[in-house]
Amino acid sequence: MTAAVFFGCTFIAFGPAIALFLFTIAREPLRVIFLIAGAFFWLVSLLLSSLVWFISVQISNKDSAVQQKGLLIFGVVLSVLLQETFPMSHPPDLSGLGFGFMSGAFSVVNILADSVGPGTIGIHGDSQHYFLSSAFMTMAIILLHMFWGVVFFDACEKQQWWAVAAVVISHLVVSCLTFQNPEYVASLVPTYVILFLMGIWAFYSAGGSLRNLKLCLTCKDKDFLLANHRPR
Image (cartoon, rainbow, N blue to C red; front, side, top):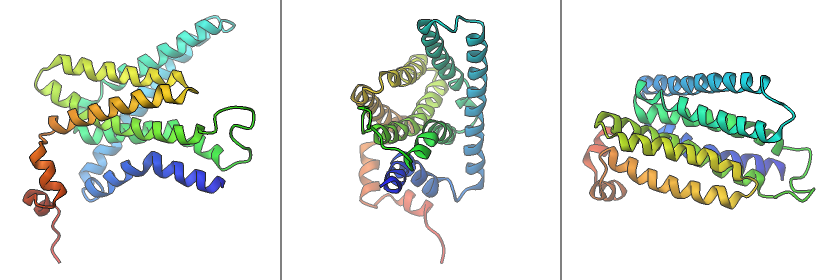
């Protein structure tokens, strides 16, 4: 059962992102480089925010639970703000997916390691949906990073600063929603609502339309077919 949980949660968390990588990025070496660069910049933002948080904890009152929770929230907010300073450095969809891959790996890798046992989740009255909820949250975060990157880049290019603010605020909201755990419904449902809305926004920001979507789904998009044609 532990193997089923491990592989099931892994495919839920990373399946869509891996599919995007294989079908849209893996065949182009330059895109792979941009993807790795995006992951690297996410690590830099994590390093900087972690350093500031660590110093803040050391000089604070460690016996105050309220103060420590406030510093944790401060660290999350700082990390989000730092992450939003990097997307303009390279193509938005690739940087966003790179951000998402690395963010997802850091978020769920330890959870997946625990899922193989030993032990039984929920044996002390905790939620038995811990692994599954974590996997779905990770999948949402990975996709959201890609959508945020597309919308952020388009907004900066068009100087629509309200849209930039909307991206940053939605990122902050999703990050802070994780503090609702283990009330997983309170965190997952709003996160997926934001994911759905940001996905639509990113689709239209990238030049999508209902006509293009219909042509793609019915395999009648000539540009798409030509771009993916491979000589025999």
